[in-house]
Length: 84
Image (cartoon, rainbow, N blue to C red):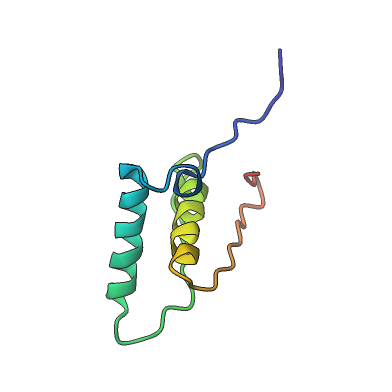
């Protein structure tokens, strides 16, 4: 049996015109409008358990911010089980 890792697609890069990519852009826009009085500098995503899509969500969200010409640094800090 192969021990290849299950690589997740970054849909916002591979298919930027898909409805899923549009949903990530809508999420980006909603986040931007939620802090209209202050400049957004840090965004943290967390949840109670593993496997809930935090890395996938934040990676695609980071791509949408970068595509809108924002500077982005993404740190996946799951020290127990990091995603590649």
